[in-house]
Length: 329
Ligand code: NAI
Figure 1 (cartoon, rainbow, N blue to C red):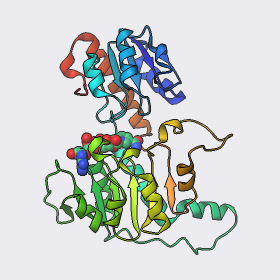
Figure 2: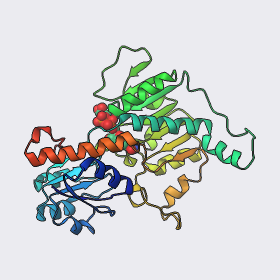
Figure 3: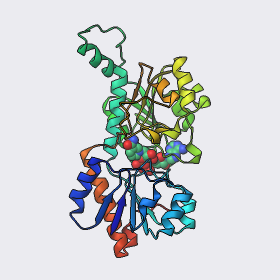
Figure 4: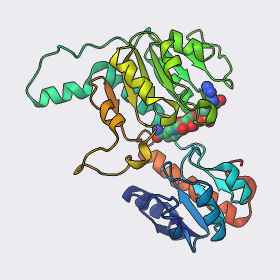
């Protein structure tokens, strides 16, 4: 198939080229797909997109007019796609439902360890020949309660890791069955908010979960709680979180995602300045660690993403629709 791959980076090219081995004709567009760039989709049978492409109703209508047959997401989440518009235009959408839950779970853990033990600050101090320990005090993870909101593939991989540290787990997820393990308790969102020393988000962003971590939710949390979001930025009301950092209700914040990330993440702005004042404020806190949507970014995950995306396209081309990981519209 002729595939137009948007938001492409050097590493996408390397891995897709290696796994494709000449079977499909792939054109790599470094720009994000949105209403301004959609004309670049002309002439392709399949369009391949990532997390920050803006696949709204106007983009979908244009793709449909251009006779694009398939929109292949090379990610798990599909909150950036207008699904009713895709249905109305008969544009099938497929995705990579799972590539490496371990990659995201391990990165979540990396944020927790970094924040708790102040690794980023210690690293900078040592480079300045400052070997003092004031301000670097952490706490034992052992015996603490970790709240997990969403125990799907990533949430469950994360729970396994945190059990290894000797943590107690408080889960909320309507689809999670209470396991036979006294260290894990299933409850509702309030149980997680009220009982946890660390709260980690692993549920999808849908209208009902937008800003699920808002002022009211923060009010229910333990003072000094650590909040980690490696899921989707829109789950968290950033302004409420900044207020809670200022009054110390939130003791640590780890983010791999940010609600307004699409204008910034995955690009190099090091020779300019940040326009987003909320994001700039976040960066002023010593107890906030932010990574730029890199939780998925392991060798294994990239290979699985490319392989599943190309397999989806191949099954679609052959009419083996039962083997395609469609997003239901
Ligand atoms: P999954 O579909 O396996 O699990 C999601 C779980 O959330 C399900 O068990 C579901 O029942 C639960 N859930 C849904 N609504 C909920 C609610 N209101 N409260 C509590 N639980 C709820 O998805 P998976 O693979 O575990 O991924 C989770 C999220 O991680 C994705 O939606 C995506 O946004 C994010 N992600 C982030 C990546 C990154 O690089 N930072 C990479 C991959 C995924």
